[in-house]
Length: 486
Image (cartoon, rainbow, N blue to C red; front, side, top):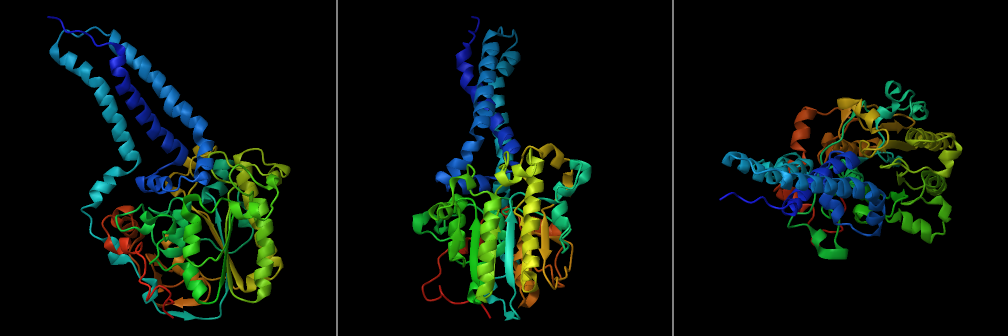
């Protein structure tokens, strides 16, 4: 008895699942670059209006590329499948029946690779490298010298490649490079530090950021603490009488940034919510936050106040205009000729140079160290094809300005190294020159090869690490308020 051919709609769900799954993997790679499961799960914890507002900028492309095109392909594939005559041989019929299932498995494999799920499984067999390498800051002796102030600026997605004339036809960072100072020639990203809040945690706490484990207090709701047992830059400075101030344009609620700052020594925090409450005019905001030129204007005023007060301070800024997918064209940059994304980057460099020039003209660099850091490599944006030309040479932008200027001890650094490096740049001597997973880059230290550290400090090294999980446990009341080691 001849076998019956199944109607086209029977195969449609399988082809649709395969098409959407594969398109999703491609869209995530195209929109956000190499994205692991930790990053996805972290942001899913913060689906507040700020995250929804940012996500809305990606909705049109998502609808077209992940839903409409794949579903149209699935319908066509299912119709063609249903129109095929049954092959005469049993093995050929088996192959035909297997095609939609193989498509689904292929899409699933692509998603698993995109989210680095296989590393999760493999990591269960890894030793606890985090416990072997982590240096608890509370147990490190710190010797205070003459305190210097700190101005720390995280620049959204700023990387060295923008300064390559062979790629962009001009040096988009020329204004910054004209300031002098020094840069670490090879500032590499790291697992658990390749998106904004993770980069802030890595550079200020010396540890990667990963999604929750069973012991994480993040499960406790709104009262949850952010890495309560980690001792970070803000904690160290606050214990030494520093005024810590954070100013950014994006809502503090996004990705838990406000919680991190609140729990680690920043009593004064400014984000979109605070700017709006303070009466900043609507024209100074873009879809997501305060334009950079408005942020810098207010940062200059706050810097003057902090310096005049005569107490040591740390002013930390986070910019926005160079954020993917398209960047934000501020009135300031439009008036200065910015017409495309390259123009936004060049304008960002010009504004940073203007801020640094303001500090130099006021004489602030004599007692204040200015550190400019890209938070991570650029995610896919309108000039992504040009950036990809840099290949394995892509590095995160960094610049240090001070009078006198500290001397770098090596050329290569990771985000974790910035923690002890920043502390020692402020005149605080760190015994052993190590904090967290970081090695100070302004002191001679003996350290393993960077490639070895990269493997051992990967997110895979955190799987099953009781030492890392303990950082998310609340301190007992008896020790919660103790200062770090002096």
